[in-house]
Length: 194
Image (cartoon, rainbow, N blue to C red; front, side, top):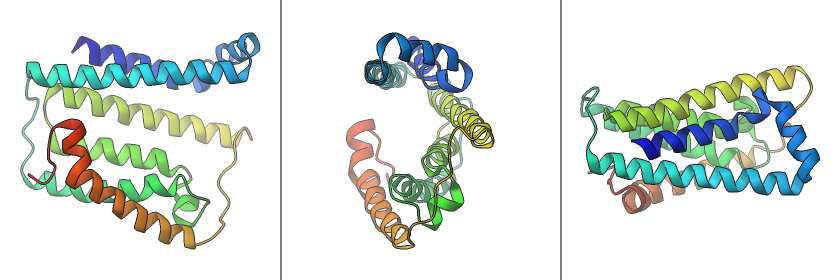
């Protein structure tokens, strides 16, 4: 699980620089310029995701200890939660409707739901490590965003149109179908409906 752990550490460090080390971020922007800093951040983020993916595949191939054995019905709960996560994810990329306005940060909500759903359905040590880490990161990031809102550093989305909620539901449902019936098995090697 060394690659998985390395990827998760790199991901967390990269994605928590702004809330925990703003001076380091600002110094990097001053030294490199914002476009170069953003490019470097993007490359390191991508490298962390590649490490996580390869590390997860490697850990699964080597077999991990079962920390718990989820009952079969947890798979059904996970599938239902993933539908909600798909809608939240899409809502986060659209101009604000009711969903985005109420959730404030729907992409983070989607990530938290995704991690929780997978924790309910998977008890292998490498799965638990991955999903607990991502869930913890999303919770920490949400808390830091709440502080940034209070400090006036970032703003909440402003309602635009309920039409965006309809788009989020329709596109989210389509995304869910693609993931469940094709993409998850193709990318991860596991059919969620099996």
